[in-house]
Length: 113
Length: 110
Image (cartoon, rainbow over all chains, first blue to last red; front, side, top):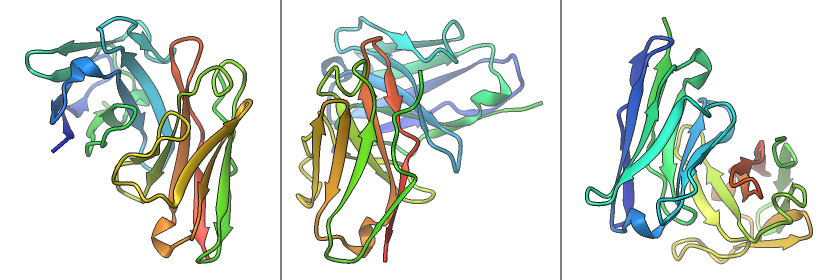
């Protein structure tokens, strides 16, 4: 079964850090462009970052550039998002996705003092 | 970069067909055939309905179809059913190696 399971979210103070993980099964992340997308509950979807199938071309939304880093471990078939210098406005549910694959349930990141 | 433009809401009666538009620019929708559509029920994770403009994941009903003309992509749902009532989002890859979403369209089945 093709699925992704996000984890690593939680409550963090402004300025803090978190690392999100996305464990994929049923497919190899090395064959797909992988994205992180976030959504404030009740609001729309917002793209955060992508990494291409060959590991190149990582890019970020302007709102997170310089603070977030996308990476992957092919051996573990896992995608990561390192989130530093977190801001209140980063509070959202974070999803890892491919163009045509199933979405996981996401992981909630709450940035609050 | 501004969001793709979608109507805030559309509605239709059971059995009818509806179309949701998604208008971008020559830097996103018009530049590549990388437009996707997502369905989301309240409190649930989104689900991809269409990718690469008009491709459908195997588990998605053929009542859902996608197309593109110039800078505007469209999602058509035929034979509207009550279960189709949801929010729908479009997204496109851009020439800046980013992805941009629309603000979403609320579909009401009358």
